[in-house]
Image 1: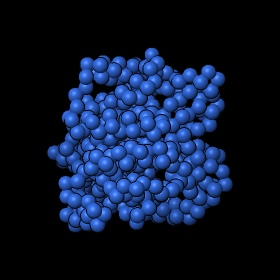
Image 2: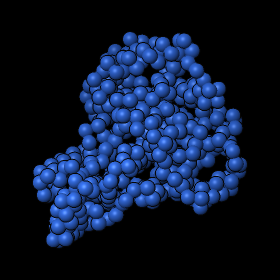
Image 3: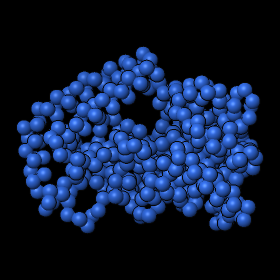
Length: 422
């Protein structure tokens, strides 16, 4: 039964996190038990009401199909992709009803508010989902969120590219954010670039240190940020909880992470920016579903890059410890680990892009935006070579079923690492 399978997966995931995170994660999980236990008890207590409703739902299915589902909102990336792609997938022409609920712990309350405007989200739906899960034959009524599917929260069919759906901001919300911007000196029509660099403070309370390989030093991005500010852009350093403030002198650089962070401002900026520069940390999903151009810097593992968005990629550099040789693209794909310890175990050294490399990639991406740039013959050959090699790697092709016309590997990265594609 799906109920027991989900329970087993949850227990297995919890044990792994405790084993890696140690005592702090154990006690963090322990604190959540009373609340979750209350929910489970309530699920059972409500069964006398929910079971008849589910049986009625199945009875009328040939005439009126009711779908049930939920969304995991604990991580902004999964939350945004799963809700947006579900809204794009729903066939509004067929007779039916789609009902959802949110799992506890919402990462961004503004996004939850906007989703509720577009989809039918109610707390009581969890009782119907539970009853449907314990009565055999409920699969055709259940919509599983992307975060709990085999290929986690990925747009394998190009839904975002082929759809025009967007969660709308209210006039009041837009006025609020623009007032905040104008108080900083921003004027209507000025272009904004969002920069989000994941650091050691990211999810530190949950002890996600095994993901440290994904972190970067914000100071290495400052030269590029200052260059963008001099070009007339407003550069906003994003983030809900960051390790340290930035030291930048230009008045067009705003350290939003240390300036009265607000969920609404966070979502609005990512949705309306001219460019999102990110290390691939989840919040950039907002820019992706709003079809904003994105630059991924220092992101790993390479097999999980976003082929389905207008994204340029310049990953971290991986070197063999013994030979100090850069791993080839194929070796990047073969060593696509999610744990820092695995890179160490296989003798792989992770090296971040330096300030010059970051600036080169930033200018490369900005040039494509400012000049409506078309690849040169050399550039077109390079991009074709990259995607042909990528799609011949099973680990890569399984996760990238749709290639956006503007999805690219950074030419500056490839030219600085001559043997990488060999």
